[in-house]
Image (spheres, rainbow, N blue to C red):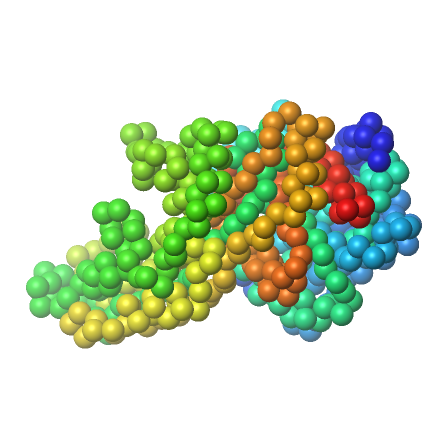
Length: 471
């Protein structure tokens, strides 16, 4: 493969072809179905699918087919099937994964910025879905097109772009079952829905945390009553709920107390975390901490392990609590909290959810009523051992595409697709990477894509595809 041609082709595609189309994709409010229950009627997910499909169809990929796969009642999936180059027909199938659905817009975007307004500024493309994960389909397609232009080889490639990832990929299992025979022997999975700790090297995600979530309501009254009359007689629903949470989490340290949510951290993952800290230094600097607030540890290694291999609890929503200006002297009838647990990559999410439910509903103080709603779960993922050919390719990319050794990261978030594919194709190699950084603002205001890093990731994918086909 001719490297200069590869690099120049990737650069041209990003500047002339990808950036204009990706900017138009940002403008489509393609909310994930959990944030837009009327997604089918609103049509924004279909608009995103049609927009990206049209762009891919126009590319120089001889023999490729671009199809929108639809199962009744489920969000659509884009499937791009690209035949292997001559001589690589026996290398199996490479699945390149991304998603087109988006997080909600939320408020607080900077001056001149907005969720559906693409803005190019200082090498960054701002807008919802630019980095998470609208660029992925473009990058995967461009890697294959550039590889062909440079005379490289690739196995059969299937690009899968789903539209429910930000909702936890509830529809994906059905599609994987539906497409299993068509996918064939998957030997390599490339996921572009991740990133790393800086923009100067290629980062591989080697683990993903699982998740459990549930809404818990504690009810003590059928209606609110005067707090001056009832307090001291009727227990506070908030205090009962606080006591229940104390069974699960040490409020002083954040430690999760239920054994079903904890695992022994593998020694080699500890070593990887230590190497990551040594490479990039402080990991908490990307977060906009309020003045005077300290991190949960003064040891960077412990922070990395906290966010990748230890369980955590976040209260992400609440009900039954009026705004302070609307609050009267009332002992409220109930309190509801939305609990979101991040689990270690190898924890059993079903066992974890069962343990949480038991802790919240057994021997409840004062016999208060407890209602649980909207339970959800997903297992994490721990990467298989890196094959020698992939290790050598990553080392080469570190020199030819980047100027720094590649690194590994244990990602605190979840990508349900990885766990599903790992179960279905246990012999496959996995390359989970991407252009996201800790400061790329995924899910929050001012989301942005580092365009130079996205181009370098695209070039790296081309190298990996060529090495996989010729291994």
